[in-house]
Image (tube, rainbow, N blue to C red; front, side):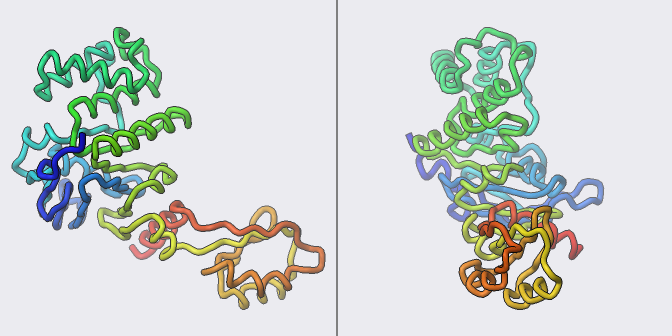
Amino acid sequence: MTPPASDVAGRHGSAIAARGLGKDYEGVRAVESLDLDVSAGEFFGFLGPNGAGKTTTIHMLTTLCAPTRGAAWVAGHEVATAGAALRGKIGVVFQATTLDLDLTAAQNLHFAGRLYGLTGAVRERRVREVLTLFDLDDRRSEAVRSFSGGMRRALDLARGLLHRPAILFLDEPTLGLDPNHRKKIWAFLGRLRQEEGTTLFLSTHYLDEADACDRVAILNHGRIIANGTPEALKRSFAADTIEVEADQLPEELIGSLQALSSGTLRRTDGGFALSVASAERALPGLLPLLGGGTVGAVRVRRPTLEDVFVALTSADAAED
């Protein structure tokens, strides 16, 4: 069942909202003044290089550390004063597991359930449900120490979802997992969002995962440098790439290609690659120049979210 709008609508009509949110540690500015708005039920990606401030931001939004400045509202509560009232409405899956390795899978979940105030009968039903959903029911009585990394990650997710949170914070949820486990986890999260209306706030280095987000914000040096849908960011910040297989090209021809396309040409192991604003507009003029039997295949590669990320964070680093 989708949570009532009143349960997830925060200040400014958002599930998550922040105004001027920032954090300093011993004089070091970890997060600048961030403005965020995440709608109820939205899948929001929060991207950035290591040290950009992603985890610190999540810690502030989930009451694990107090902001130095600004304010934030999550699930209708101001994070600086909400405490337990807010924690009961959110779930958090951290980068590193916080499971007790000496307890069994079921014991870890029952312990979390008691912290969330779930009663015995409800707690037992929820534990059974999440263990089944993550294919862990047959391992419920085994110590977590014996679990593989993928199984521990699945149990982390099961624990974060046990109390049916309105908002789920995912800090590198599939870090280190093989493709099969990653696929299984995202299939479940997609189903959860569709059936429960859960808001997902994702921090990840796997940019193919972020491509499925409704919107993404890119963070660097503690500040947001881009915000929008993945497709809009690709259109705005990245170019098409024309890849050409060629043993060698005369320097005058390389100059002609660059002048004709107004693009950036770089050599590759098998030939060269030319970045252009639009491959459709550039190809008609480029192809006649590539005749004469010196060129093999010609391929067009559309921009990816990774291209956008690298271009923006590299440019931002250069400016600093």
